[in-house]
Length: 306
Image (cartoon, rainbow, N blue to C red):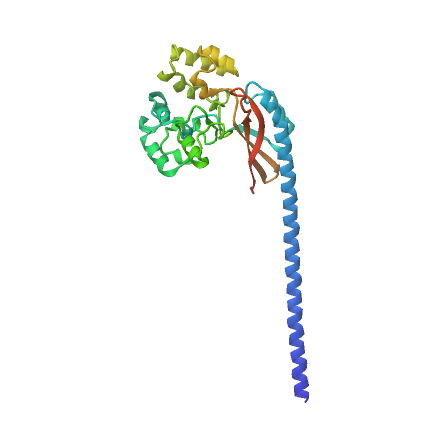
């Protein structure tokens, strides 16, 4: 009997120990979850605050639409960077340049452009690769096709210009939306020029001015004049028309303008926490070629660094 009582007592102790250990484990588990919950809640709170700061910056960016030109020393951009200097705000143009998918095959095969852009002065390998791989979301894959000197002149953001209905991008867009009607494809397809001359190296503009199809009179002289003007400061659309002696409805204004379509913002919300965002200019429907309705936030990313 005593043996049975002892066994029962021992069994009770073991069960109690087991229950105690389970309880202790559950407490530890609960504490771990609470720690994670608190940390996660804190991170979420920080993300919300960072997101609100980003929205505030985008609101402050809206008046830029009323400027005739965009440039790195634009007063509004300078004021924004000063206002948010504590966050190391950086503002970058990410759409001014040559987006290869947005150029027609006749563009890519133009003597001046292919000499400037492609290794071996031949776009055929790129065109074959593009046709099999589809639209590019990054220019990284183009590296092997491009001359080193042309790398910085190329971009992977942009609108499709209404005059570029022969481009690979337009064909993909019209197939995806099952229409080639330009109004139905707005704002994806619009009349904003492909690059802002104030935000690129003047040298990348020369192949376009020299292009025989544009019939610019004394193109070498005009290219040099525009290059010197850009090195001295910003230009507006009427300046381009004047320096190149072409009307504002000239085909060259498909490519050259003075407003930026896509921007990137980067700021440090706190030590080790960075926010990156892409903001796009939405053209005014049936407006002028550079008339902007508003700027819209289309992408954002929060990254952490040690």
